[in-house]
Length: 319
Image (cartoon, rainbow, N blue to C red):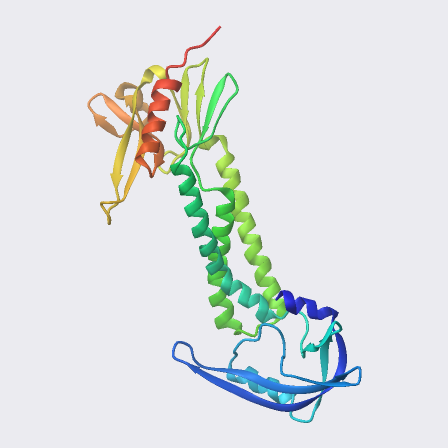
């Protein structure tokens, strides 16, 4: 595509088609593929040159497109040849970007995201394995009055690329079956506008949601309260005083279809006399539980639970 964009600066001269035919190639995976095969002659600085390049990034096509192109360039017909002024033997018959280039970019984007994402994950988990934090892997702010603890979440950039991967994947099928590989440039510009627009919108929505105060654990020093964030089962934040929280522990959950896969939920044990008004699920005769955060690493969950129990809930107001 980069080379094809560069052809916009090529100079043009008349040329003659020397040979023109449809070339077929059979592949066991994709069946029979076709491509137009053309040889043409042109003259630059009184020097005769012969080339067979139609454009950069030529790919196989369907039978109808290849035949249509050959019919437009019969043997002996005149054509316009575009050549590089710095290297006249480098020439093409078509300049600029076409819809098929942007379609190929849509098709390849998910594979590139998976490849790059795989390397990033290796680096990310490798870096986490050699570093430590006393309070687990999360972010928090302390202004002297409130300690605001952000929930662990997917990085914003990852949300963008996940949305981009998904939209490109589905767009490949929609465009491929609806328009074919040789789709018009206008259609592909519209597709890319929708793909990028949706990806940016999803990223903005996720960032706004992640930054919302409803998704933070908030400890108030003077009120001695812990406000719990919105979760899947808790539609609105709820606050408890430190005296109403019995303990903070880690609960292990095994995946239904894979007992070797675990999630580690940090829970606050609340006295049932207090929890009844919130209709919490009881875990014993005099206790109920509230979910705080879920981790996928046991060490992180235990570090976080210990930090809340020993450092946050036991903080004293200093004069």
